[in-house]
Image 1 (cartoon, rainbow, N blue to C red):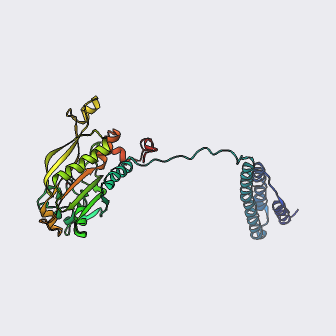
Image 2 (cartoon, rainbow, N blue to C red):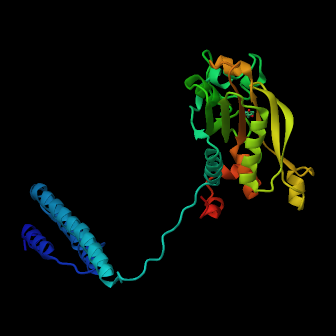
Image 3 (cartoon, helix red, strand yellow):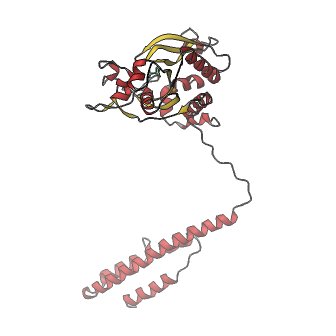
Length: 343
Ligand code: DAH
């Protein structure tokens, strides 16, 4: 038979082919496209053909090849969807489902939510400020002197110099924004991310979280501060919790204090984390320095206030006995999965 006719006949055969299973498709592929398949035969015949016919023949063979390839691709698809239909038909749709995988909240989110909840019940409202800040809101407006070491590039990530733009090193910057924006009385909590130029270790990170508190009104006293923090500590750590305030220094508060909770010394671990004292520092606080009030346009003869700031990671590590700060930022599911069911 002439080659041309042979091709036409085969093309018809290919068009008429039917498949009912992946095996049949594979069989078809081998017959036509296999190492000893008919396309190979065609190529051999093509070589023998007289030169003047080669142009037309080549074109025909090419078209035929494409036809076969297309048919195989179609067949694979058909066989796959047939297999799917078969699976669907066998599937028992009345079977009870196997339960969905349950995610977990990040421990920092759990603790942030709990802390905010406690303070909201005491009348604080949540506010947030930008992570990229200017020098005024992070330092100058909070009474940091120009030569203060916190302004050093060793401690702070600068985005720009003159004018200074930087990643805020504490959430106290939001205090300044709020004091500029609102008139007293105000009772605000300000959660957020902060950044410091620190080497990453089990105890330090270049990015962490704080929660800031600010209360300004007529006649706010240090006793109000102590009572608020005691109440907070007892809600968070348990009704029997004791706190103590140690004198400290912050540029924006006067007087300033650091607050410890009594952790106890029942176990060896307790002794290690409290360095044998039983007390653990949880936050810094103080009465807002009148200079800070004035800088934000609040009359310090009429109003006074207190502020406090705590590190979310530190408190979360205490609550869940987590030994390494880096665990919070590594997205290790073995760690995160342990917080399933915590809100
Ligand atoms: N901003 C301080 C820090 O990052 C923490 C702090 C101390 C916040 C005293 C306050 C405060 O509001 O009154 O170390």
